Amino acid sequence: MQPEGISDVNNVVRHAFVWARGTMSDLGTLDGANSYASGINARGQVVGDSDTASSGRHAFVWENGTLTDLGTLGGSNSFALAINANGTIVGLSSNATGEFHATLWKKIVSYP
Image (cartoon, rainbow, N blue to C red; front, side):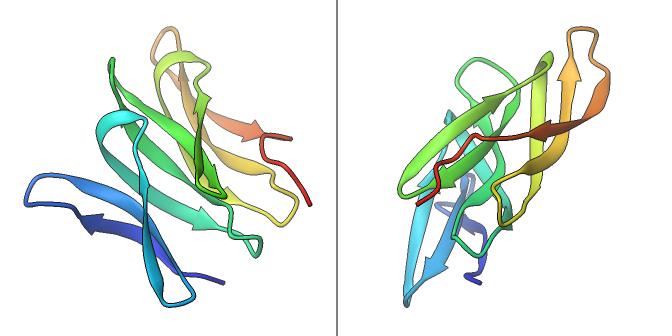
């Protein structure tokens, strides 16, 4: 597997990254300041969460240079924690009343 995590962009901003074949790649954000990687699978698909332009943090999946917003259960925040070999993602998300619930995302990413 390839390492993933966060790296300082400057003294205030941090971005998720993946390290592959001797190169560190910044995964970017969902139009907010910061992002954090929390899981990776053998296919190199990375999950985590990012600040958004409006408000809150949203779970994401990154694959082949594309960062995809996984949304929420109607609230402001969601967090992707792990992804398996089939691309199934687990995490948590807030609903419209602000309560957090375990969340499962399926069939978000493509398969060769």
